[in-house]
Length: 62
Image (cartoon, rainbow, N blue to C red; front, side):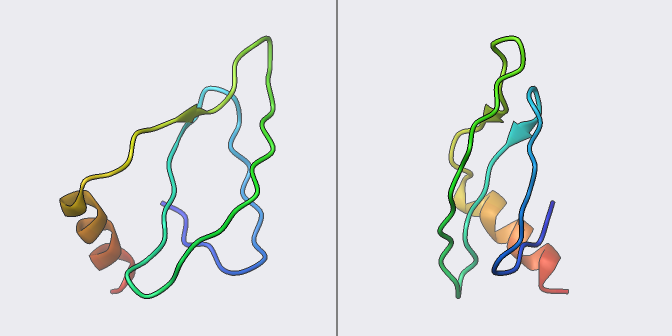
């Protein structure tokens, strides 16, 4: 898990599973540039469940 701050850049290489989201108290807005390597890009995952979201949020709040 990566805790991002305003202005951060995150590189997600081809083949890496990827998802993102806001926190309970902050929205997230991003610009995605998709890189392809031999036709393969990062694997964008499905939305997380509320339970998984709460568990991740609790983990970064410690």
